[in-house]
Length: 515
Image (tube, rainbow, N blue to C red; front, top):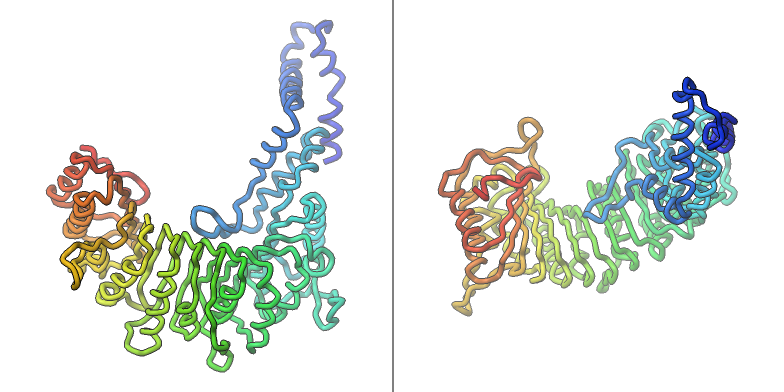
């Protein structure tokens, strides 16, 4: 790096001579002179840029995906070995002394680092530790750090030989020492992937000193349960005042519920692939009072058959704008499932600002059309009237069922008390059907069923005639074989009448709509 700076800041003397107007350049030296001239021109142009512009360019080059994307899902790195943000920052700072000064004075370039924790490579561990120190220094202690324990989750780490100063029975490696002991206030966003059994049991103790932690992501590659309610209570008490973003995967369901309900500053939360606790370790929650989640705007939740799900009945989310809910329940053949259904309906009705709703109704093994047909009307009736986008997860069996368990609940209905037509979700502007089951060539597909499209045409025409919709987007992630010509004509007729209609199949707009 130092040699590179010497080269870029002190170009060969020939460069100066060749770029001077008085230089006597022979015709045979033109080919040699041209590269130097181009280098001087480029160097002068970049040097002329104001610091603010150059710093902004550097930040754009070094921008990595955040743990959470505003488009509606968390981002998970495909390779923790590729620290593109960090490598780009090092590369830019090595170009010249001027660029190095700008890079070092731009903290956002150094705020993201992904590290795979190794077992027996002490030299590599020391390298990662040095890189982490460098990033902490230059980021001004606002780090977004990913630690992946996946490679040591089963066997443990042989490099954990540093006793924790507050508990000498807990041993840390160099990286863990930097994170949990030396620089605990440096981390705003922390991701712990593939968390091993030892660290899982010590999680509340280790996280306690991280005073500036706002975003936490925990993914357990191996299933380890918190063995007592006291441990859940400790973790809740440590995290509840701090977190604004929480992402849990393969974690105990009772822990997920407890953290959601007791982190009042949460704005975004996801809990997926939840683990059903053993009966002897299930968290027995106290009698609940009403819970208000005043700042929660984004929620992705996988609900399972567990008594903790009943707690949503006394929970409200008045600021919620996006809700993705996977209702993994069997048919309501017992009081618990029926109570959970009602709890979700009550929770949904409190989300008065909701704009986007994503729903999957199925149990672990099969999604019965009758179950969807019975429960979805309750959902759309409880949903706030300002929902503009609805995503429904479907199965092949549901798609070939008549009446449609998805389109029928969205049609207008006459109430028993009045002859007037009630339209569910009257402000809806987009409907997406997502086939979760895999299909041939990794592209889900369904057999030709004209009635699928016919139901959609009826659905759109009803809303168009009532003046509820002037533009609408339909999208599917599966491919239907050729429909009957009358189906295509039905969609085109709506467009000729004035409806601004878009249809996307596999993220591509269809061409036949304008024919």
